[in-house]
Image (cartoon, rainbow, N blue to C red):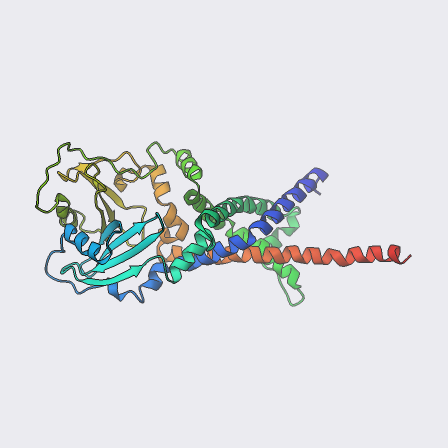
Length: 392
């Protein structure tokens, strides 16, 4: 038998669990459903993105300065974020991105051998853009929706911990029914709903905690810094582009030195999946090249910085440098997104993430039904007790 104090604590925790669940239920349902849809984005898009592929040729890719010139003719007066060079059978993707004064996020695909324009794509429209907007801001304005989602995910951590406490049976004989569905033909729907909420909630709690934690790392800067420091991080966790080493700038009519980078890196990183070149923002900043070492993964990318005048490699004080130089805390932060979407575990990891997100989406539904069933059950009892006194 539990003591009155323990019973009182359990009631308080139940109230917290119930109130937070009702407040965040709709948000958590939308975030979970959109999350499981996002997991297989790359695989689904591969069925209708033929424009991303070309016939391989026995010749070098066009130089980066020419790519820049062609792309800027297709989309003038916009900022190029980066140029992605893939395998010999893949088109070059030039990504344009501006957050201000309004979001502009489009890509231009070019033939890597001739520079011929293939297609212009609006990355801020379409099914998966719609899914992502729902996931990060509930299709509301950014300033409002992102805050609602962020704090709901933070509260989800509290819901998970309180739910685990409530799941722990008060009597040893009840352990079995908390670990499995013990149903028969006479089991009522309320009992089934309770089991769906408690049993599935227990088994999915660890993955739900992982999703919520990695989501908070992306949503809150303070959470990001705490997670990095708590795991022993001692570098700058921000993305830092270092300055050039050279102090003199030589102007010439010839091609810029960064035209040599991509051919050079293809010879050095023979197993790389792609290279994303970022043009220097001004005369004092280095050229950034992101080397993707695994298809569909981000954590083990190499971030390389080169003096734009001499092409001398420049080291960074940030965690975003060469992966081989990353410490434990650096890897934890860099793995965050891949863990969040399940890609860290390949196809198996994505399937687990998909199913886990789907089950997480069911918890607010079964929770609301559980709450409604208890409220609905109490009301007739109150009426029966009041009826004789009222009639008298």
